[in-house]
Length: 455
Ligand SMILES: Cc1cc2nc3c(=O)[nH]c(=O)nc-3n(C[C@H](O)[C@H](O)[C@H](O)COP(=O)(O)OP(=O)(O)OC[C@H]3O[C@@H](n4cnc5c(N)ncnc54)[C@H](O)[C@@H]3O)c2cc1C
Image (tube, rainbow, N blue to C red; front, side, top):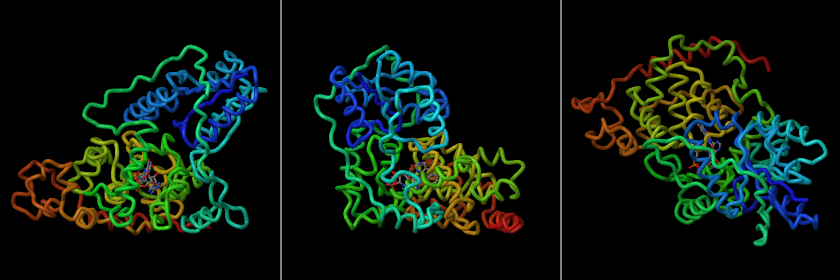
């Protein structure tokens, strides 16, 4: 009997233990000719939540996967709780293989599919992480709540070497009617990088040769392309973090640590599934005073019209590229929460709508880190000054001019402070909607009014 490889966030052939398990199961049965049905289900729950950028990216990534499977990817649209058993019934498959999902929705979905499959096993092999959530714990078995000791535990735990390659004679079987690629929305002028496993490896090789050695020095510079830009490839599993870790040397500690942040946040979310939408520190949802009349200021923030160039450039980059530099993500998030007094959840939803690398764990906890209400969070009183951050991490103003044509006439770092120049607003750039120094005091007062944590 054949087996089914149900792809989800692992859209690759290389270093894919679940796929190897599916192939091994099919080969173990002489009557199956080693046939594996490579399946992807377009689940309306996840598809509708993805937003146009990730929908378009996913559609392209599936097209690339289909090509590498010789056009045999079986795409079915609909609820997988019904869809996967239908494929099993139509093919007579003896097992369904997946990489484990640790997200709140994915875990529940997989349990429901498992139940619906009855006697046909749902076999979990590997995960989207080098070390699966739940594996790295303190000596007493409880989860870490602080990153640095988690990182040490993660290093001690270690991870396996990349999995073997798929045998060249793998026998893919489409088996039944394919519903076709999900129709991607038109993104207008928003440009996406090339999708797929091959593109992921090309980007990694480019970064490994030309960017890795300067990563620790340049990664905070918003004006330079000093980071890997691998986030979307990792998000969809077009490349596995284990494949990257295997190619790092002792000198690449800073990059290794960044990969570990992704694993840490996945672990935190798996241990605290409610933190996908709620603050880990519940005082922020229950007691903190937030702005009552936030719609206009939210709109100004979301469209990049707050009058603070570093913030506005970040939000316009988000809508132009579906991506924002990490330093700028922190600054725009801090501005929304601490200058506009708007909850992190609204900002996180906006990011998830637009980001091509939008990932529930990294996004919710990146926001909570900035808000000061998550695990290992930056303390609330750390309020980023949007002007000083701009001057430091975009010293010549190139980043803000790239996204804000209204400031193109201001040379060098002058683009960060148009209010200092008589011609600062001649390009039509908006005036500041709030006074940062004043709003900082308001944020600190709101924070000091909430009760101290009990534990
Ligand atoms: C408010 C906020 C929201 C964020 N939302 C997301 C998100 O939705 N998806 C996402 O992948 N990352 C998110 N991040 C983390 C980080 O900004 C991105 O991973 C990074 O900018 C992606 O660019 P890169 O691939 O060039 O990163 P690089 O600097 O090259 O890092 C390599 C990889 O390490 C991981 N990584 C790096 N920094 C972090 C971090 N702080 N947290 C978790 N993983 C990290 C990512 O997988 C990244 O691709 C968020 C950060 C903040 C402050």
